[in-house]
Every structure is written in structure tokens, then in C-alpha cells.
Image (tube, rainbow, N blue to C red; front, side):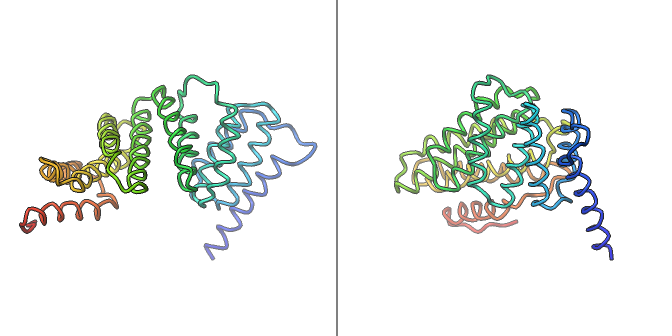
Length: 283
């Protein structure tokens, strides 16, 4: 009965929404109304079916284009990329991303983070369809824009995500060529990601502690795994142990923090370190 009730609530909302956007002869939608509707979709996205989100956002984007409302185009496009991402529609993301990049290509700053978000999302989609070089280029542009985000905590989060994307690119290059030629770049971007991730302030009101420490702990874990993979070099086994220890310490030292799904990666790294040392791990 509850499911039926919820269905009718969502159906009524969607019908009213569609009528507001499409109904001929009705009062034109203003820029303020577009922003209001976009905020509603963002705040209630979890309760709106992805296909419905797509339809709503496409309609708002079309109206924004008709009004030549750049902010509405970029925001609806950015949210639409998010909806596509949830459905693994990478080709659609790239097509939309290329369209949006024509609008933002001459921009110099990204105070809200929307522009860097578009470039980063496009880069990830390019990576998933195998266009690694194009992906790297877009991530590097995202980094440039991310440095201009006005809120420092949002800036640091976007930067740590982008640096981890660049780390992933160089990991991919190493696997493709079966060489360790990119190891310096790999560890460089891991350390850059950790450096900016740690700059995110706790309880800052913008980025939750859960998000911050998930990024930080995952980076510590990846550093531990990197040094373990290169444990034949002097001092790297000790560094692998140190990074794994810092990951555990960071997670245990933050009240209310739920240890992220990277736990399995941490455990694997820690066990491997102890295994290489020839000793048993004791909790």
C-alpha cells in the first residue's frame, strides 16, 4: 500500500513538473524557476527515478537554451551527467560533455566547481570507454579549474579526486606497457592527493567528515600498496607498513567515522607487509 501511495506521489509530481515545462500557452518559466527546480531535483534525487530525472533535466536544459540562460544550461547539464553516470551511460556523458565544453572553453575561473566537475566527469567517461589520452587531458583541465573554486574545502576535495584520477591513468599506463616507467608519476599524484585531502577541514559545513576521510584513507591505502608493489627497492617495505599504519590510525582517530569499503584493500596491504617480513599479524 505504501509503495502504491509513493508511486502516485511521484507520478503527480512528475506530471505537474512536465506540464509546467511543456504546456503551451502557460506563463514562461523564468530563470529563478529553473534554478528552483534544479535545486529540488538535486535535493530529492534519491527519491526520483533516474529516467524521470533524465526527462526533467533534459526539459530544463532545453528551456535554459531557449532563454540563453548559461547557468541553467551548465547546471542542468552537470546534473544530467550525474544521472547518466548512475546508469553507466558513458557515451552519452561524452556527447553532453563535449557540448558543454564549447560553452565553458574560454572560461578562466570556476568559483562554484561546476566547470571542473564537468571536465572531471567527462574524463572518467572517456577513461571507461578506453580513450585514456583524452581522459588525461580533461582531468588536467579539471585540475586547473579546480584551483579557482572559491570554497577551500570543496576545492581541496575536487583536487584530491582529480589527482587520484591522474594516479589511475599512470597505473593504467604501467599495466598496458608492463613496465614501471610511470612509477614516479604514480606516487607523485598519490602524494598530491593526500596533501590536499588532509587540508579539508573537519566539520566544515560543506564536505562531510565521512567524505574527507574516505578519500584520505583510500589514498593512504593506495600508497601502502604502491610501496608494497615496489618492495624490492630499499626502504619501500617500511614505507608500505607506515602508510598502512597511518590508514588505520586515521580511521580509528575520528569519532563517528564509518570505515569505508576500502577496508579490504587496507587489510590486504597490511597482511602482505607482515607476510613479506615473515611474521604474523596480531590484532
